[in-house]
Image (tube, rainbow, N blue to C red; front, side, top):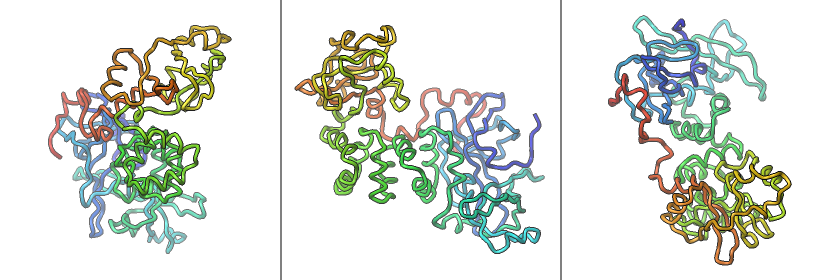
Length: 437
């Protein structure tokens, strides 16, 4: 393949990064450029690369041997495997520079003179010194939400691309959200961690409630609290309503008691009631770990109806492995708990069979006061990924899933992927070893 010496940064996003022997290292997530106070042509410092372990590292641009239309190849020289941390004087092209308002002074583009345009891409080129520099800026004039023609301008004919401009409030996030489109919530959560606080808050305010709720659930509770506190009370309550009740309860427990009480009062009662019940339990018990919205059926439900319930795309894989059978009502806390049916059993039975006839009534249940150690032993002993939580009066209160358990067993901060897991860098250590940046 033919390497190129001029690249538009937005097209680099998501490209596979290869080691010197062609092994996959990760994917490009951003480009880091120098951004000094004195106006001078920005120099490319390196790439932010997301490893297969989801950790994002910095790769100096001089470690890049070629950039092709579908991949970036590195040399065998050593690079740091430490998590990327932005330094003063550095700017992220995708994360910070795109959507910046600038002015164009190109005499050939008089129609843009004196009006604000936004940056939609940057072109970088390799100079004779082997350094990569920003040479062109792609801009667009936005008119009442309409997309107009993109103009590519020489960098020297653009003013306003400065550190102070990047710090101005109210910067758009359209290009950044476009990069996030199609990414999983956990991937967007990782990207938000690497953004400066200003940009992180702008993104959070621009996301719709459901998408933001999904992303918040992939952050640690302190990170969730920090972002939720940037929202007004009404918006914060709306986002909490979109979260799973157990995640919303964990988040509210991180907030100031007064703020948490206000948000609970602003939430729709139908959404706040299960959260209030969860907050009554210690976070390190089955009652504090459980979700109050498992799949609950009555005994006269048919196998066909049960399978339709577990096919719900909104249901997590862990919750879909086990359905619980109770007397009415089926909303937690339910009527009398009768037992459970494994999804594998449902798949083996005729569609018209009623679940009341295939109940597993011998499986032990967890108490809402069961400790973290007891829950751990339960999952290990019965080889399950979901377990019923039943009170002393035999009402089903909810279900604990293995992912709920792992959230509490793993060390704090595990979501940020700061520490490499076993084998996470094995694929690249033969040719690329870790040294300080």
